[in-house]
Length: 82
Image 1 (spheres, rainbow, N blue to C red):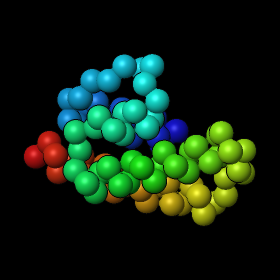
Image 2: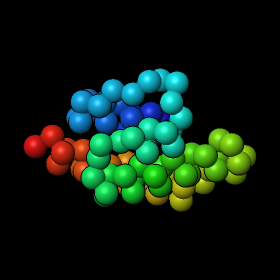
Image 3: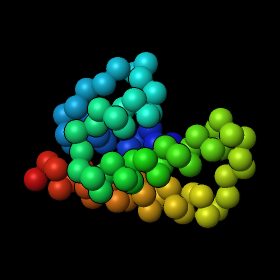
């Protein structure tokens, strides 16, 4: 959910459109965001991939790390729109 919300924030804050058919990694490659935002988004994507595709059970630690990365992404995006 945090990944999807992060992508929605990108669309809204930096007014960047990308096709729904793109993978998260494709979006990451073409994202017009700061290095801090890119790093935060990369962390979220990596953790989601491990859970979703790698069948790695998500733990409370994983959620907390994703939440921290989401916060960093949101802060980077907020700075981009200022």
